Length: 258
Image 1 (cartoon, helix red, strand yellow):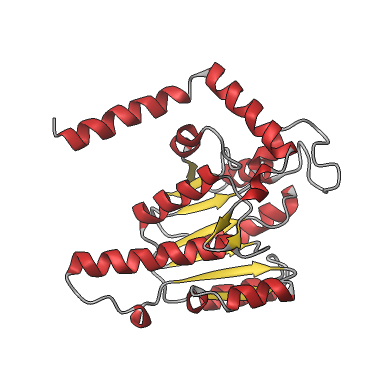
Image 2: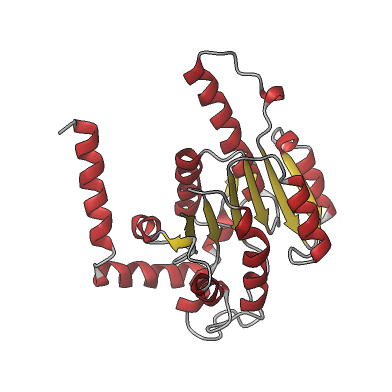
């Protein structure tokens, strides 16, 4: 066997084994719960902007972007903008690598790749920081509820002409809101690409864990994902991603369009 393929095969077998390793999963889940209680996910930046994610999930996004090569990423939930900057920088690297592969000069001004971000409240200091960032030219923001019909219309209009689309949902985490986001934005995901639904971990934490939030066990992104999938067989959960990471905010949240 080719040594590269042998490595990949061995790694795939290891990852598959994690999915059946109850002890390893329990250990990972216990650490995840402790880390969430200590606000661990607030500790990191991406290119200077706070990104409220586990490092594992940041790596997962890099792998998915490289594997699927989207020309558009749509994100609901902006906060400090770190996730928008992450996606924009990954698209910029795609452009650079594809130029090298093609043996042509890299000209970022010729790229159509971009990131669309939606948030109900883009605070002035965050907007200013995002708009002054070196990745700003690749970012388009809309302020308003992600499920407002007018915002959905604007995002769909801004998405026209893009051939490979990825969606990331990370705003309000109640069942009804996430289900409405899935109905609005998941259809924009193109074949082979992903809709990543963040914070599905709420279903796996103790009831009342987020005492100051409206979501809880039984009312969260994971319950919305499972309901959505009942009537949308064009998507499936790619559990190889969560098995690889072991610590992720998105168990059952990596949805691949078939």
